[in-house]
Length: 72
Image (cartoon, rainbow, N blue to C red; front, side):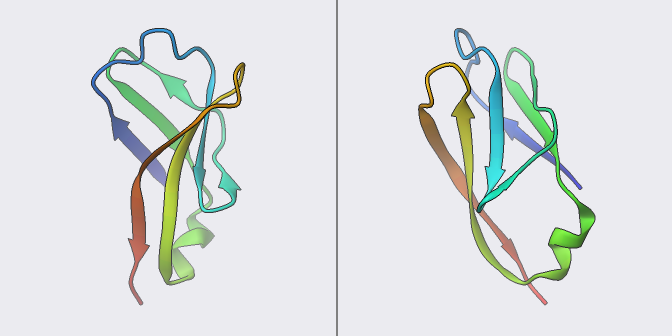
């Protein structure tokens, strides 16, 4: 499953990780106004709400970007 996060700017962010709940996505791709990451499709079989967070690898700073809700 791919997750796309549109942002105003990624200037100065460097390498990031995308987390859905506690699950870290595979390699995040950072473009000018877009961050993408992939997650196992099995995650969709577990209903519930999960926080979506972007974490800067170099600084450890985290940014809450929303909630992903999976309905049965």
